[in-house]
Amino acid sequence: MKKAAREFVNLLQVAGWSQARAARCLDLTPGAISQICNGKTSPRPPTLALLRVLVQRNGELPAPVPNPDQRLAAWEVELLESLRRFPGRQRQKMLEAFHQMINAVPVKG
Image 1 (tube, rainbow, N blue to C red):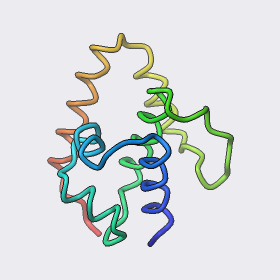
Image 2: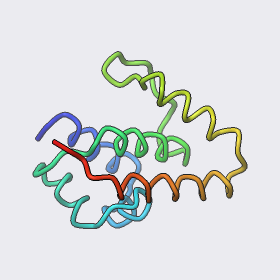
Image 3: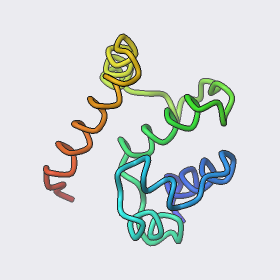
């Protein structure tokens, strides 16, 4: 299992999330979550970053200790800081729009 998939599974376990909850929160299919959890695929970096943020925001993980391998890129920090300025309900609508846009763009390997 690749490092990203191991981290994904670890985050789910530490947070006590089911695969179904992860699928709902990340706007992925249950099959996609299952493939990640079984090590058949790895989560995309934005998906893993979003899971980190969601699990931490819900208080299921302590604040992360800076780790050079897990630091957010400058654009990720900028995006998160911008999103934090919005009230929760408005931010949720924006996240849903981001998910729709991300899912609409084909990813080239």
